[in-house]
Image 1 (cartoon, helix red, strand yellow):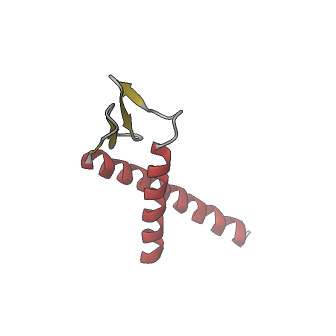
Image 2 (cartoon, rainbow, N blue to C red):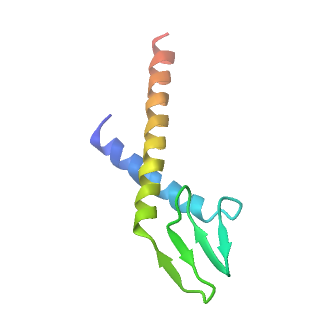
Length: 87
């Protein structure tokens, strides 16, 4: 894969991570009116007084995990595409 492909996959993983965090049915924890958002780690906290907090460690962990998943899916797709087109 080319370097631009890795960059595109990285941008896609960030978009997936942010969009998945705001889906209410997925792993939203509410404690004392505070909402913790993020999959697999919490990276955004919306407090009861409508302010918010940003957690860098959770944000970077989420990007890393989702990037690895997207990269694996792209590699598997590339393998199957080569197999199908050569047959």
